[in-house]
Length: 496
Image 1 (cartoon, one colour):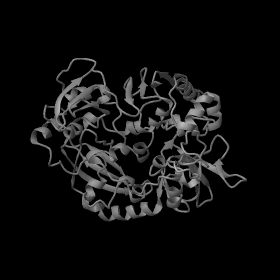
Image 2 (spheres, one colour):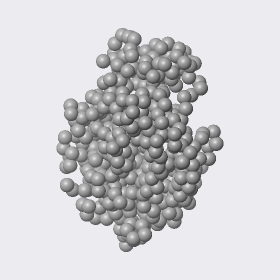
Image 3 (spheres, one colour):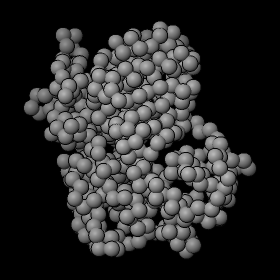
Image 4 (cartoon, helix red, strand yellow):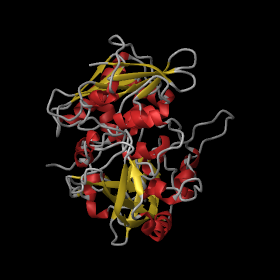
């Protein structure tokens, strides 16, 4: 199999699909852009960042389709009005981070839809808003539904990713100090990371390679570029290794909104360091002399692709000193929790096939005490793993990356910091009736919106619904819940 370079053009528009698709892409950004998009689309993108014509949307879909063609010929990409549709029975087993697709709005797309012709674990025709939610049109009359029945068809569906769980709702874990200080410009990012030791993060590709970190070489002008050759992805052994950031440079991207040499609203010249939300390349040199490179925006690079070594070491010391205190304590699963099979390896829990390592959502009892029997900090990947016993006597694994923990948050105890997507206690705000409904995965009128999330999982989207109320979409559109202006359930609808 040919291991071609990750296509910078697709990364530039925020097209990040956490499957082998990304690694299969090939071709330089300039060639992709010139061959796939009409000139007026390129001009519109470079000036305003927005493309609204149907012609440009069709051209963008065709370009993405063409980049898949060589190695993934079964993938189909098409533009259907303002909806971009991805279809393939096997490739899209999961669609991990819906927010990463939002930059497709720049091509005039407002929604994305994932379709499967069968054989994949993704439910057919999953569709969601790329940016601002729009009101959904009910497809059938309202009926009373047990959410457990609705979820019965969702065992293979993709719940929120570890990143989403770590940044949402009661399972929210504040970022580490390095990510709390957002580097908004290229200059700020350089001051924070240049000439600093960083730890490399990535996911495995074909079990042997890093998905996005590739080998690099220095050019005659002093800048860096990907090493030539078909096997240029760094071996997966570099994941967790420490290296020095030797260079940070702008990456080619016609979608970069701010241009060097341009002027701001005051007529001042914009320098390279002033560019906000830069699309850039990070170059790291390892102790053995190997040089690696990765591309992305600040929000996609830290902590997903790297983090300061000083921050990782500080977190390690805090975790290892307190980890013995969690033995024998209890955790509680809710609708958005993830537990893994006791046989799942670290690579399976953090790699591209992560969904296959999970326990079925219906095998996990909600708000029942799960006793912690083992705990360990994996310093090479920066994660805590906990083994818990379920009420039926079986075991499961909880996996929590340390980069989403913030030990400076004095309002949260240690166990809640390392519990990942599980709760360290049953929230006091839940009523006895809500607790009963959560355990049964059911709804009732007057139930709080938070309790609904604990019973079903995080909502897919939310729309305004008159008088300050909200229409919340769950289970890939199979369940719509209406809440009033006090965040209490008024009604719900289910769809086959």
